[in-house]
Length: 104
Image (cartoon, rainbow, N blue to C red):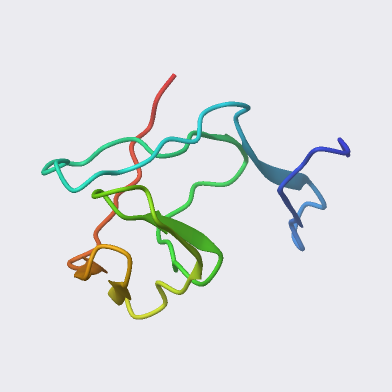
């Protein structure tokens, strides 16, 4: 097993180890101007095919107005809102959607 593996699962039937790794420097970001799907991460999948995603806490959101950062954003409910006191505006994430696309 490689030391940089992000997820390793051993098959109970055949004993094979299957892995998912985040490809280095593949992390992207979304902005309020993104209206279509956009790649935010690329996985190297060996023996595993992801079919769903459950966002949880640990995300970082940044206000478009001045870059105010909100740490440890929880997207468990697929929505998030907060108030940017510096600019007196609401900041939010709504209608969060995702999909997996095979790339080679």
